[in-house]
Amino acid sequence: MAEKKLIDLYPYKVEDKEPLFLLFKRAKGHIYEGQWRMIGGKVNPGETYWQAALRELKEETELVPKLFWSVPSLNRFYEHRTDKILTIPAFAAELNAKNSIKLNSEHSTFEWFTLQKALEVIIWPEQKRLLKLVHNIVTSDQILDDWLIKNF
Image (cartoon, rainbow, N blue to C red; front, side, top):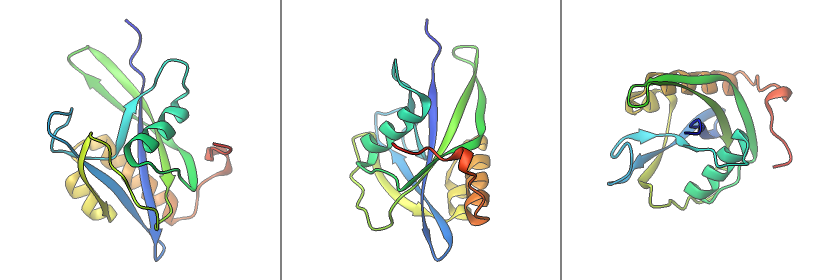
């Protein structure tokens, strides 16, 4: 069986110098039903991790980011059903605040959250940690050029 390759993507917009995170409530009948989550998904054969993150953003919102970067950390956890330790790269996408979002069937609704509110609704500890990291990097204006993914 091929190794499962996944991505996490943290979409945000900046208003009054404060990042607001776009989170989605998972729809009935889908994995993680009823949970608030950022964008996550599988990497297709022949696709890089960053290409998968962009594709998932487009599929789930119909948006293209104005800034797209690799978060300098990983989401790691143990999946008991497969007895595997999953290592998932994380990405961040700054969105234009004026763009309208068109959800696909995987989600029932979406909302923009401050960091504090996002931490109250996100369940997974590593996702909370990555939200804090993205927030800290954005608010300190410390997105390194090496992390930027250009020409997408």
